[in-house]
Length: 249
Image (cartoon, rainbow, N blue to C red; front, side):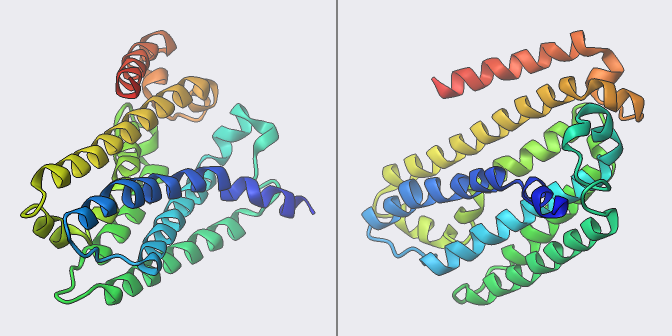
């Protein structure tokens, strides 16, 4: 029973919903309408876009799972009432879940590749494995480094709305001949949203480092707050918060 109750906490369903919306909204409300207005033919269908969104969400979920696995000792200090790995779900089972998710991501990436029209781009076979590896590297080593871990995971979050642009590169290029201003405006808006996603996640990561100061310090996780102290770490967090406010405005 405890395992069933703990499973939704491990799966991070609200976070996955945000990941999905970060792709769905920019593509279906900005990028695709701009291509259609220019008389272009989008490459992605509802099915192929759904596969890309599903693969992105599962890749993110695998990152959350492996991060919880490596953070189990830190979480036992910072938030003992919310620890899942090792308490409600055995560590071995969590690793099997991560392995299964990673294999599924690679299978779906291969499926996306075969759905692409000729000449096929190899981007699915590169992007999703690289992102999976970066998320593993972040959870295993880079998370406990000052700034670098924050930047890496924020870059991956910022890449989420950009991914649907990859299969549409030729459609966007052809559409610029008919409506260059509209296409450039749409692409600029998607990139602006990607920068917003990067900045908001960077702020979240820095605030999280401040909140997790005690557990990180006890477990030798050398974040900026641990190395320089919470007072110093609040300065870059405040600066990023100001940037986020400007982007919202």
